[in-house]
Image 1: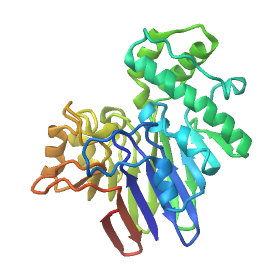
Image 2: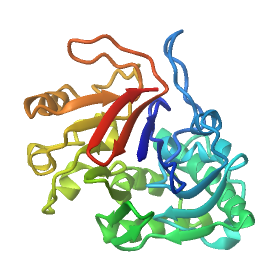
Image 3: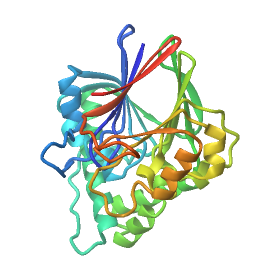
Length: 313
């Protein structure tokens, strides 16, 4: 049996996957350092606190899809409490920079400051992972991986040119040869460097695309899936009719906070999902059509041969 928990970290991603029989535990992204509170009865929770609640002190695999703060910031709280066997990432800075403290210039743009903050957290996390003895794996190209007897992962990168461009910008920034303008440029395309995962278990397919924009991966011929985590928190660039027609998910999960004021999740995206009969869930207490917002810690999918259940945790 596979449990897939889409954790309510507010505006961010943290997805916990577990096979209790094996046992096997995997975390895809870990939210932000700060998750905020929007309502007295809200149930947002950090990835670190959720794993503590579930009694998890060790991860077989930790995946960082990309270096935006709402995916990577939670590393700061997670790693002191959890041992990681294997870590997957799309960028590794020079090892001599691991553990370094990075200043964040206050006159840089918000996007550049957030990326610099994220990199500072990441450098300390890499030093911690090295000290733990974790296997650190740089994902350079698409591949497949058998995680357990019943769980496999397809691992994809959508644009090698962008991956290389990201690495060049970061190396210039870390060496002092680049500044806020370069990071602002990176902020404009870093979503499309995301590691995209296709998990297969007991006849069910789960798409976890990080924040890759629909226009970047709809160029492929994609098989249908059962569960799709919408990229980029349900923004208007998350989905197109072509992509949805190929994937035809039974369920869609949108990782988004309930206090967004920028059309996120996008009404256009929600209409597309509704028109195709896709049942939609939100990690935070976002009102759904015909239902009231229900605070919860996570949306859980319980998958076993011949059965799939959806639960609020």
